Image (tube, rainbow, N blue to C red; front, side, top):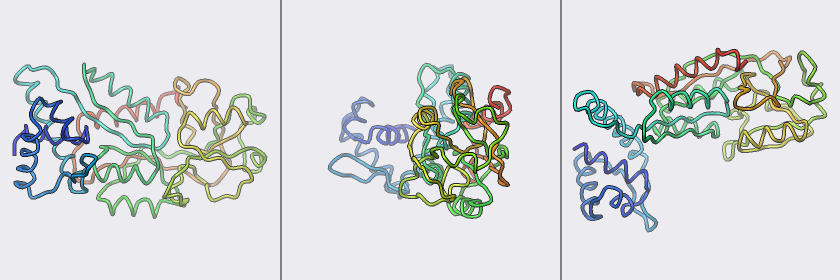
Length: 304
């Protein structure tokens, strides 16, 4: 196994196509195919499944690629330190529920390392996919919450996937509404106050059980329900329809503007928000920097 072979398989994974990867690597397609087969034979692993439309990554290939990326990252660090070579393109991925502090921390990491080239990914996605992304090392870090209602199931799934959960903070539930909402002047709200207004939540697709809901108290019966896939749409509907959603109360005015405000929700519940990572795998320098940035933004006055 060589570093060159590892670079080959990472490039193929990124392009999803042998021909395109060969062009990017400036080698012939047969040479690339042979190099990958030799690596698969040596390591006794099937990394790619060949199809008429290109290649897909096998389950064991996902795991192998995650380790390959870490090896390449460490090799890049050595070259930067001792050979004074130009920095390589860093790679880093996060999968998270829809939290503004997660986005702000991601920006901080990019600014901190300030590379001329980088390949970073931030996936604001469904809860089950967050766990799946980290378990397959598609993302290094995941961000989600647990509560008294879902904690047993979520932590069980996290453990079954060889992951660990590390608490960032515990929050009391808040309601996000627009600044012009009829209830905007209240110090706090209860569920009865909200009965006549549309309730907005993030759609969870195939795994639409309340255990995977991004919103706490999702099992309550509401007359007006709207499900969306992205944060911008949710906030636009919050403003346009005097709707509301339930979250942690941590919000960024810089990112979301002055039109969205948070009000405490008077319920006996909590949100335990934390990160999930591979149980026995050390974080990359980007992962470490990201967690530090998360903690900063959680504590910043602007995000309260």
